[in-house]
Length: 314
Ligand code: UDP
Image (cartoon, rainbow, N blue to C red):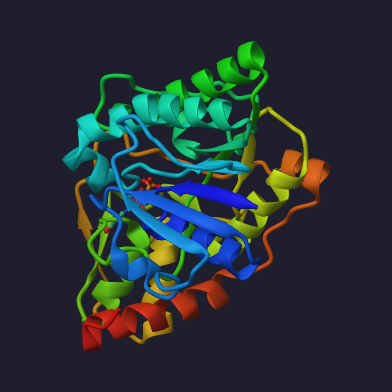
């Protein structure tokens, strides 16, 4: 297959590029590197099956030759990133999705949209199943990401319904692993790097808010499975094992052997109180379940950040 991955130099995008290169596909990675990095794709950069294009997909995209799949993963995706790049976040979710759908139609290819649990906003039900319509503050600081992704889902379904484009929508819940950026502000890199530096872990709010963490290899398997089935409705991909942020901090301090405990910091505006995917649809439609235990995924992720923190290495 010949596959385009937008955002292919980002955390999730680079794992996808690597996965498809290993399966002997041709991969075209498009990224404008505002939050992605060339170091994420260094293991595949010289592979003849791999092409990197430095381009902002919010602008018209031109690719020569046939394509089989377009996987749209380009977007700032951590709260501090989309607060730093609010307009780019809205544009890549809206114009970028429009352009990538147009490319898909022109090439008669298939399309997969990376959506997010953020479409549920600060959810009033838990766990969140796909039929839940969400509780998003359109004008709050996270609205730029949440609404961009909600629009992206709407236009993807419109292209499916009105232009018969073969589409998939994956709602990705908190995912972690190697190649997260040390400074992306998310809880996993923050806590691990603080613990490795022997600092107190910064818990926002009372730390009783919950998240459910999925290891990157489980997510990639889930995406691969979605691509095998003809199902156009959104599907949650995430790990349903829920944990409070305080428990998460304690777990990381214990694993790293950090004695500095935690400090409380103000809770960011509109920070969701709970988040836990209902993954029944994924189980029924394509028999997917996450397999990696939090301890095992964290152990690998800690090793990755050790190199970064102690040796400043990619
Ligand atoms: N969080 C925290 N300390 C940090 C970074 C994040 O307590 O140093 C909290 C944050 O307030 C949220 C949760 O951890 O409740 C997950 O935050 P993250 O930025 O990873 O992603 P989100 O799930 O909010 O999109």
